[in-house]
Picture 1 (tube, rainbow, N blue to C red):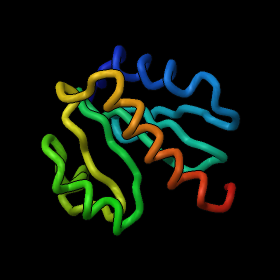
Picture 2 (cartoon, rainbow, N blue to C red):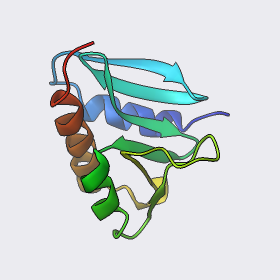
Picture 3 (cartoon, rainbow, N blue to C red):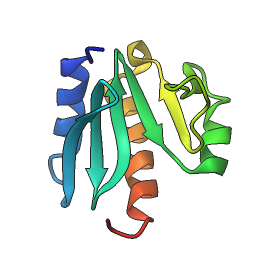
Length: 108
């Protein structure tokens, strides 16, 4: 599965000043990690965000979000945000939320 390279570049730009961030191709897309913990990624044309269970459940009430079920089973702690709903402000907000959660985890 190809992924939206322009969305990945927008994420890179958003993360330019954040230390400890790396990216890795996986799941047929790309993920961005902080200290080895996945935070956000791009699958197809959409953003995936790791939020933790409670925040993910709350986020599903927002327009343009859905459960991340890449394997056919819902992946806890993750949501998908429709790529066509991501203006710069919205992207920055979702990326920050993913970074905040990943940063709360022990480094790998």
